[in-house]
Length: 49
Image 1 (cartoon, rainbow, N blue to C red):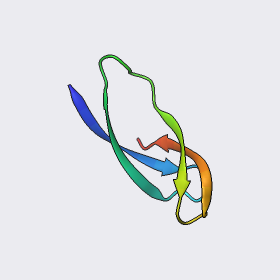
Image 2: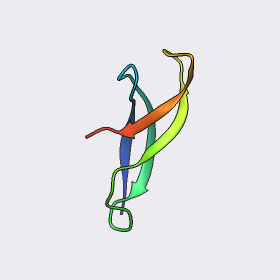
Image 3: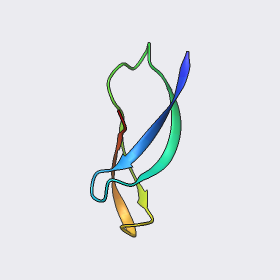
Image 4: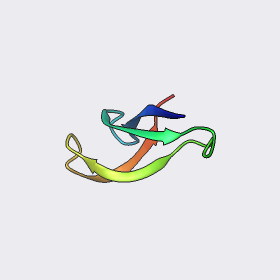
C-alpha cells in the first residue's frame, strides 16, 4: 500500500514536496536531494514525521 509523505528541507525546515512510497517494502525514512525555493539551491530533504 502506497502512502503520501511530505519532504522537509534540512536547512530551512520548509515543507516543499509531496511524494508516495510503499511503506511495507521500504520502512526506513527517505532522504532526497531536491531544489528548495526558499534557500534557492539544492538541499537534502528528509521525510517529515
